Image 1 (cartoon, one colour):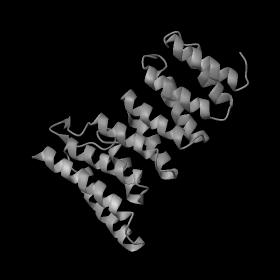
Image 2 (cartoon, one colour; image 1 turned 60 degrees about the vertical axis):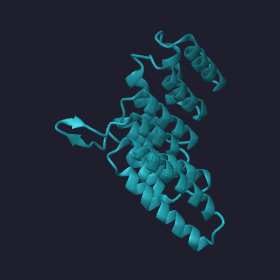
Image 3 (tube, helix red, strand yellow; image 1 turned 135 degrees about the vertical axis):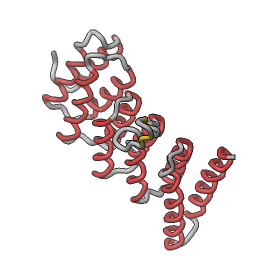
Image 4 (cartoon, helix red, strand yellow; image 1 turned 45 degrees about the horizontal axis):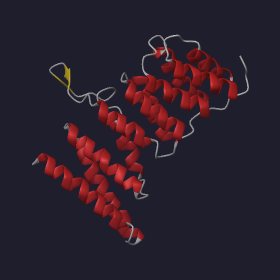
Length: 219
């Protein structure tokens, strides 16, 4: 029954979102507002499936070109479920949903603006799951967030995980980020750190070397 209600919920939002494109501006705004109220209600549920349904519905709305301000706030909260935003029962965190955080962090990359960048920085600072961190860094790359504050936040992750160097996906996201960054001392130092770490795979180290050379500062 719960699964059926979730399917009906996401289906209704998709249909109503598509229908909103054919409405007047006033009616479309009202429809979007109503959709967001339902999505917010689902995102506030303690149930993991409800939260995922909220993220999926936001994905569909954004695909139709609708990017209400409330969407960023909801995704920012969902991207911290179980890390900064904890629901604790009898000493146990009951809302630790890495898949919700990962999908939310990736979707934030579709919403340009300083609020999205700030939310992703919070994800990186508070997150322990490499897959979620990778999604957040991918979104920062998409948003072209290369200012010194954001770069310092990404550097924090690089040096925190450098001793392990056991996640090629995270390494790939870091390299994508540095590849798009304007070259400076911090970026070149990060690339050389990855290149010279024997714990990384040869593929990762080779790519770091190629990016390093392409940025015009030969070894």
